[in-house]
Image 1 (cartoon, helix red, strand yellow):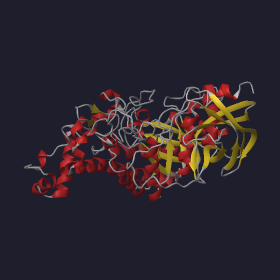
Image 2 (image 1 turned 135 degrees about the horizontal axis):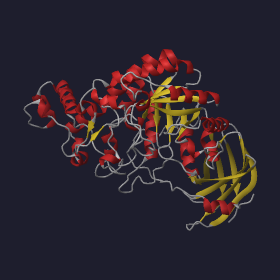
Image 3 (image 1 turned 120 degrees about the vertical axis):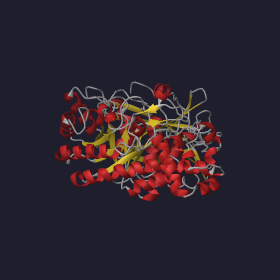
Image 4 (image 1 turned 30 degrees about the horizontal axis):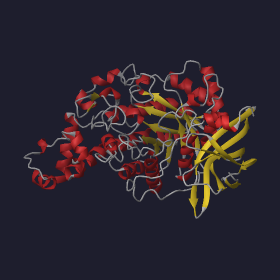
Length: 548
């Protein structure tokens, strides 16, 4: 090799893992792990948001994906493109060329029926608004969202508008009619349930003044939304007297009911009250009803034509989870008050679930202003999905740029929590425009595309300590050259036995060493021998011994 172990280590980065998970956040839901990758596990890659202009180069890229363990390409099929000309005036030409190219490359295809706009969310690099003619079909109050400060958002249709499901149904029907001939490559179909294709309210949007890690704003301030809240409370309580008794209020009519007038105070104190619980249950319930409606339309159009699974996505809103002033406020603002009951609707609607942020850890769980615990969130949601018999697929939330620790985080979740698949965001990370692989392809392929399995190293060394970082250095002959990948792993101690675990592609051969660095990043010992380890199906265990 041209580079030494130490040279490679100097270029590596370490994401520090939090050893303490916030107590009580997910009590009762963190003790389940399947310790296997599902037999039907598949790897997907998300296509660019922007339109393809060079189909020959695109096919070359897809062929490279196919040759590196990718099963299918996931693609946003933009409503704003295909029905731009007018109501029920569809043009599918571009996406048929797209599907032809995917088929020619030997990949499967997962279309996302993207009924949201592209532009304005994290990672967006295109501008595809909803069809302009839509806004003549109703009023802004009916069709759009309004937040606490009065900002009006039209990045997806409001679930309170009576025409939303009708418009979606027409789109679904046209897609089914036009793509029935592509049944052989369509592996599954995803539905956009709201902003960024996620089942949620547009509570966090930069155009409305939001910036990370702010809580975001409630979206229930149109007259249409307020009237729905009032009607729901009247249905629940029957009389204003009964409502006053429950809420401790003195209202004289249901028309006086309103969503929270002071969002900060609500998330600090009000959410705990009967009023707060009623509001948040109703608010989330709007999303559940919306999901039930679009799922019903989708099943009626897609099941007999394609016979594939249909899915939807929940966002990984991981910040503010343990905020001492307003815990879970970011989740609540997006409409996630009780994940279990949201997933009940996925089960009732026969939908698969996609969940995000598998690459993240809990290192900022107790750090202001973030209070971010994405790993705990992923584990909680995955366990809930598993307990309800819902197939769960994973994604990364942000681009992974040559960070092996993040790929290890992904693999840990995939292996231990029964995920059916993983979608990498996004294609450009692992394949260049000319079809050659990027430097990120190797860790992606190892930890995700080639079915991750655990490789556990027992470390015999008197100076080992819990939480100490061991750098597992993998040296492989790949694509005509030596390819070295560094996997940071934490030592744990179980009954006096020191172990470090990494996740690697099965049936591969590696040349490993163990490295320890001091607080300044200097290598202070190198342990183990340069032995070729062949990782068998299901993983393996090895032992290192050394003296300092």
